[in-house]
Image (cartoon, rainbow, N blue to C red; front, side, top):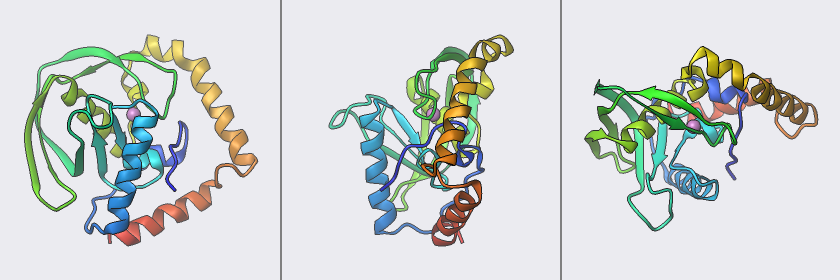
Length: 194
Ligand code: NI
């Protein structure tokens, strides 16, 4: 059963690896990712937010199950991005934290679907913001890395709260040790990326 992980879990800083095979259990995990995203009222979720070190993310800009389109992007790459726009963002791995983030207004994204079909989309607006946020995740980047230094100072206390929660959960064994986590990631990489 997949579980949402929070900052500063080390898999959120992992550079996710391209997927070379898709099997029934990966498809099943993608289904679980949608459940987790809807339960937490998100509009996008990257695989490393459920501790999978794989280059894949899901999105549904409506955030509602049964509404809008469920998008799955495997091995996404942004080709061209233009314009600049600033808007408030949050992240399921940083619950309660919101801040203004500058992003490109529109972009061209290439990826693969679960069925291996090529995705080639020109995107703008909210979906373009989601795609940039999620691809950042796959590169180990969080939206708090992209806010102004003033905002980072404002967020300092809240972020250190996340760090103490993580450390105490790890001490209590509720989160595996960094070494165990790295072994888990290796297993996923052997299964889907090598
Ligand atoms: Ni996020």
